[in-house]
Image 1: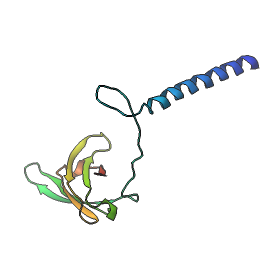
Image 2 (image 1 turned 135 degrees about the vertical axis):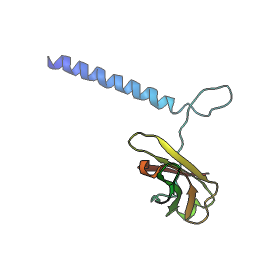
Image 3 (image 1 turned 180 degrees about the horizontal axis):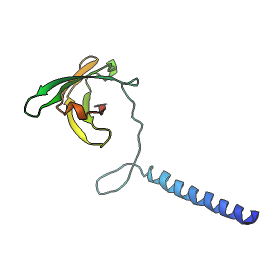
Image 4 (image 1 turned 90 degrees about the vertical axis):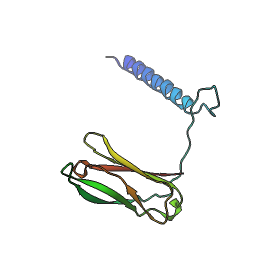
Length: 133
């Protein structure tokens, strides 16, 4: 392949990627969404807890199923700035991606929260915690 042809292909590729990038950039800046309109916008969301949290599980034997199940999850190490916010917790299986159970705390008090959530303890391999409000 000639050098001239290679340069043309490279220039065309760069122009194509720039056009696609411009389309995505403009889609992200459509502005305020009002009734009977379609659009999108992006916002920066500040976190009240930037260093993460710790989860500790309590389990109980469920004779009916013959399995241990989670009873509560204590979320600790929550930053004081999160007090009064809502906390959602979902226990999941990272292999299948399945949600195994979830629970909510309506208003965080202090630096820890106890969430009642029942799931098969053997299947729990991950968790997702969201603090908002």
